[in-house]
Image (cartoon, rainbow, N blue to C red):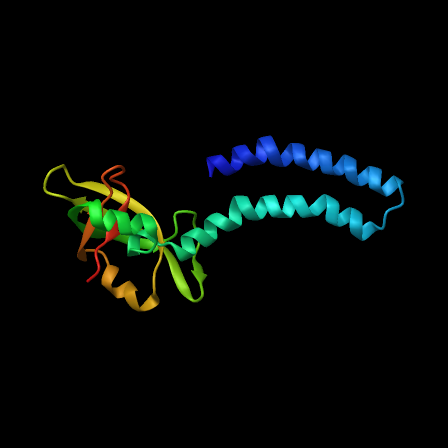
Length: 159
């Protein structure tokens, strides 16, 4: 989120000013209003999509926690084993209830125990099938793999 904010601050806002000046210049040269609108709004719409739309699509199609995507495959091979206990399940950390294709986007608070280090908590947002929600109720335990580089990134082992 911070990267998106900085990108908007240093690229988006200056781009808006440049496009506003270009739009007013095109308007004074009697270009049709629709072409001025496209020239001015098109790059802003693309910037908004790349800042906010692509990360959302990435989350939708590469669910690391459930073992989807390249990073998850790598963690399943190289990560160290641990046990996760569900502490709580609820609406996403951004607040509110969200569903994508009728599947809930939920926040899990998990207690991770690897037998080597002190148990620690991980909070993560993930898209999960409605039929799988009963498996993740508070108190449920399951095996995970921990990313050796960042122990806050975990992947559920396939059952």
